[in-house]
Image (cartoon, rainbow, N blue to C red; front, side, top):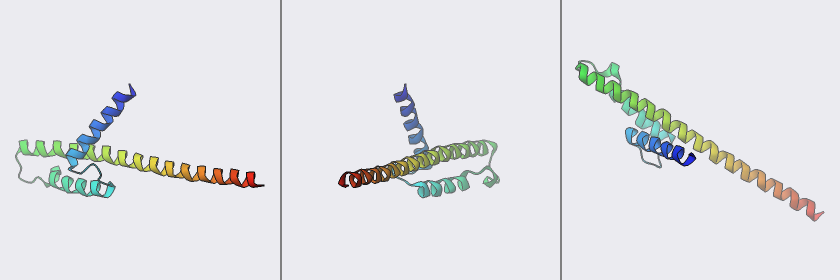
Length: 106
């Protein structure tokens, strides 16, 4: 069951990256830059003189861009938090090992 959930997460991430047009290794600033450009291009208020069909298409694209941005930024922030936690755990483990070594030397 967890494998299916993780597969769904990957699909969402791939779709979000495709919508925003960013590479797999893009960082948060690259994602934000792509998002801002697409929002300006597709914002419904910027579609002066557009036909109702064009306006509906741009509004749908705008919403898709927003959802993709939310998905990707959440994933990137979670990944960063995990990496920081692992790094902190590694430092804590190193401190514990040093303390044990100090105690054994006594």
